Image 1 (cartoon, rainbow over the protein chains, first blue to last red):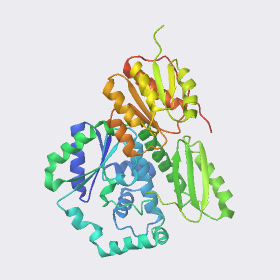
Image 2: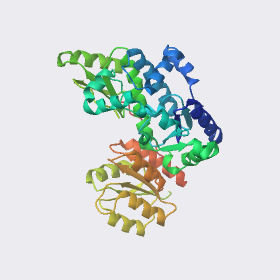
Image 3: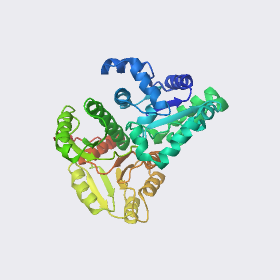
Image 4: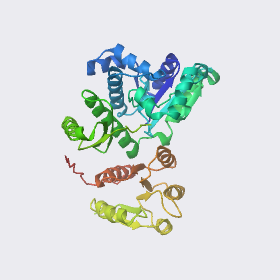
Length: 269
Length: 137
C-alpha cells in the first residue's frame, strides 16, 4: 500500500489529519516525536533538528553547515522509514525530499485561505527574492548556501498529489478523501517506485557521510552507483575524488562512485 | 511434468527481446517475442499467455493500449510494463489500468525474474527457480 505525507501551513492541522488517517488505515505514524529518535541516532539535538526544519519552511535566507547537516539527518532517517510502506508522515518536511516516488501520496491541507493569507507569496520580501531567482539563479544558489531545497517552494500546489481545503470540506471528508485515494491501485508500490525510493534513500545516507567532510556538493544514486558533483578546482579533483571513494566504501550498498568536479552545482528539483 | 508458464515479450527494440528471451527461458518458461504490437495482439487473441511483458513507447499501438486490450479480454493474463521513459504519471496510469508491475529500463535480468516469480505465484503456478545474488564492487 502507499505511504502518505501530510503537510499544512498549520502544523496542528496536518498532525491531526495524519493521525486520524493512520488510525483508519492502520498504518504506522511518524511525526515530530520522531525527532528525538533522529537526535539520538545522529548525536545531535531536537532543537537543532527543529531549527533546520524551521529554516526549510522560511523564506530561506542563507543556510549554514549545521542546518545542512541536521536536514540531512532528518532526510535519511525519514526516508529509511518510508522504505517500509504503510507509513503516514507529517511535520518532518518529507514533502521536500520524498519526491518522485509514485507510491507515496503527497497531501497538502489548507485551512480557510490561511495558506493563501500566510503565503510568503504575499510578502513583498519573498516576492522580490523570487524575482531575483529568475533573474540571477547562480547568485541565489550561492547566497542560499547551496542547500539542495533552496528552489523548492512548499506553497506551490503543483508539488502535491492532492490539495484539500479542510475549512471548506471539513475534517471527515478530508480524511475520507485521503483514505480512499491511498487505496487506489495507482498508489500501489511497484518495482520502479521502490527503486526510486531506494535510490534517494541511499543518496541521503551518502550525503550525511559526505557532509562530515565536504560542503558544496550534490549526490544522487542509481542502482548502487553514486554520482557526486562537487565544487572544486580541477587541480583538487583527484585528491577529492579519492577521498570520496574511500568514504563510499563505508556504505556497502554503493558499488561504484563517479565524481565530477564542477564550477557550478546542478540544481535539484 | 506440468505445463511451462507461457510468457509473451513485446518490445520494438530487438536487443531487449534478444536478451530477455534466454534470461526468462532459463527459469523454465516458454517465451515468445514480438517487435510490433499488432502481431503481438493477434497472437494474444490466439493464445492465453500467463504473462505479457510489454514496452510502452512503440509505433502505432503503445504498451498502455496493449494493457487496456488485455485487461478487457482476460481476467487472468498478468501484464508487466517495461519502459525507458519512466515517470510518476505513467507509472500511476499503468497501475491504475491494471498492470501488475512497472519496471524502468535499464534493469538487470534478476529484477524482472523476481517480478515474474511473484506474478506466477499470484497465478497459482509457482516456479521452482532460485535467483542468485551477485555482489560486485
